[in-house]
Length: 340
Image 1 (tube, rainbow, N blue to C red):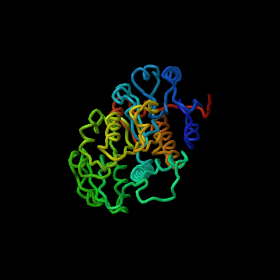
Image 2: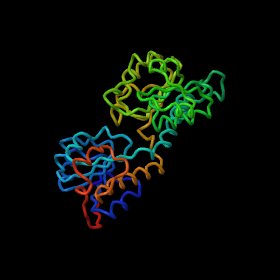
Image 3: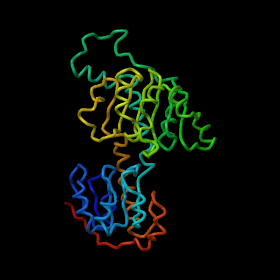
Image 4: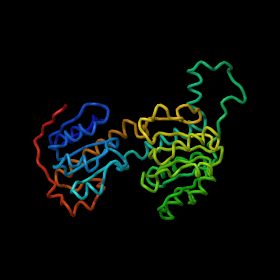
């Protein structure tokens, strides 16, 4: 089987117990050519969300029976195509919930209180007056209204943290949870437009789908309060970045905190880079030692489960069971690792 990049342990030990492992050592993602060449004789692939796994890549790996992605999303994999070919697809939800929720709050607080801007101010040797009443004014978080787009695992974790800030909680989701969930979180449902217009802070936690592509565009941004802040730790394409840049520049909204972008790495010419009222992070919401270790462990276990003929945790495409039963996916390997 093939691993596209070194991960945080203990993934390798888990894989080596079951199969031969070819581990690509480069830190960046493989080219499509590299990926196609590597998969010619592989039964399993452990990849990341930066690797686009489509029909062309699957054609290059005729022996593939399992693709395990170390990610909470799987929009980089053509799931219907994998299912049609009898390829099991697993992913790693849940284990990064609390870590990502923590980081969403880090962005929210940094945007509200202008932390990154203040840091740049000092490093740029611009701090000349010790204290002034109107200097670097931000906005309070305590007692404000937080709107959450997507009340899944991470959205719910963000809501739980808001209780300590005495916030009013609103949410929008296409699928409403049971009333008991709303009551336990102390959160109220709002249609999207109402949530945007009522909230002081908006945190995005939806999957990227055709329906959520540019869910937040110019019309939605103009509905927000001019004092509001937008936080995105989901997928970059959920927000129209050009519209957001205009909103930040012209004061439709007060600030933003972004961990994800439509293009990653972000284009060096992006207008967002030159704006002081946006906090930018390089897709690190799950980047804690604890979370990344759990992700690598779960990704490895998902892959080896299929190769052992066992039901994997977090199977994306359950329909594949009817096309290739687990008994037919089972493989036997020597305990040998090849590092390249």
